[in-house]
Image 1 (cartoon, rainbow, N blue to C red):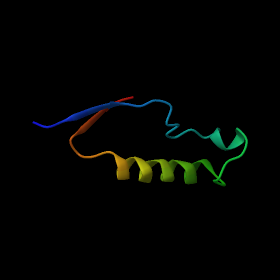
Image 2 (image 1 turned 90 degrees about the vertical axis):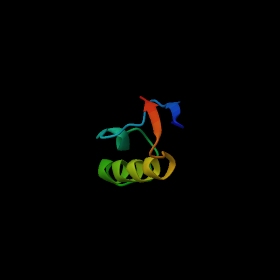
Image 3 (image 1 turned 180 degrees about the vertical axis):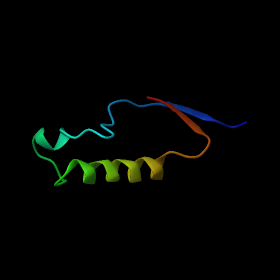
Image 4 (image 1 turned 180 degrees about the horizontal axis):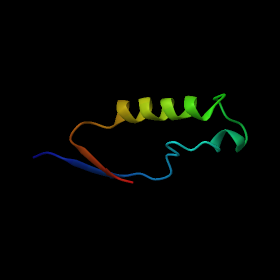
Length: 52
């Protein structure tokens, strides 16, 4: 089995106060959440394991 293992932290999935932290390209936390999911799905492959 060929499997990659990666480590990641602090993605802010579901964080509702992130838009209050200063300059932010999204009008709402929902927009941020959807973009994080899209970017994660583009990068992470099916056989990879991430420890968050």
